[in-house]
Length: 400
View 1: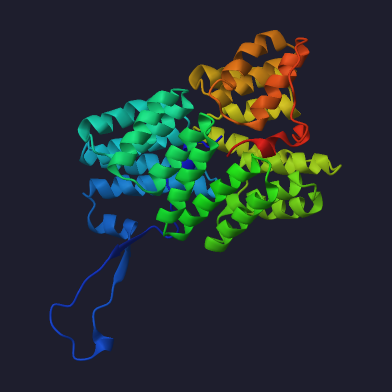
View 2: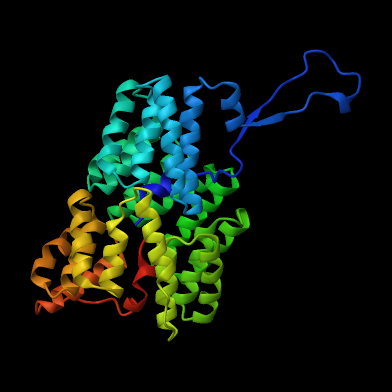
């Protein structure tokens, strides 16, 4: 599932550059002597103008985005520090509140994110950024109608890559694949930053992948990397397409590059499952280290560990994590995680209501459909399983 972190910022921020353009007010004798644009980092600007509370809020947003880009959760602490400074300068400002909401969402504190985003909108009803965070957080909390209303407001206020991407996901969750593709195509046409182009192409690839069209998916991933070679999700997409297509050696070679760049838990689990498929024994040491790192940074991600434990560890621990996730964020993916954990723990009857909830929105998610079918079969009911679905590579079927 696309998490809120996916939408924390659509352009990959590299050097955090703040560009200022200045023009000469008198004619220059020679063109070579004409004034040129110059750049100033945001940090340098804040040293010069320490009272710029919106600058501090922007810096915090960039730190939240860096946590997503690099997989380094220590950026959340930096974001918190920048937001504390901004709040001291101008408590109640909508940009500061929206930044606090984005940080809460990045740490998977989605109820807090909703509360803070709503406060930002109370301060400024025209804040498209706040509506974006509100949409993401409500999606994670399972309030899909509330999320769609927030997306609609964002589309009205600021149609563009960020709004189109959210509209695509809302359509996807209700089973409207054509609508999801249409909005991603809008995002693709609107994008001009290389990272935004790569983002749109990557998710067009994801739609194709989960529809079973591996060739089209790989083509989109390749085009995403052509637009922005550093876009790691597209590289991981190529690895998924290779693994699902049976090209395991190729997939493992790509996964080595992926986890060297960005050792996120999702990628490490995908790599491990591909190794198992290839007859190799995965080493989960780095995955467990990443788990401790995220926990120490205040990121509560019970969902990832519920999914991992149910497929590769202790089903009872999976149930514990899944219940904790579902109690906080009762979305379709959390419902599926709880259903599958209960099934793997030998409780299919208790699992079924959650499996039904997970598949109730119309979302055409092959993994959720497989889990429900297995649970129904365990209860003696006939339900078709897609013969093309490979349960040994379940992590690769999860929507990112």
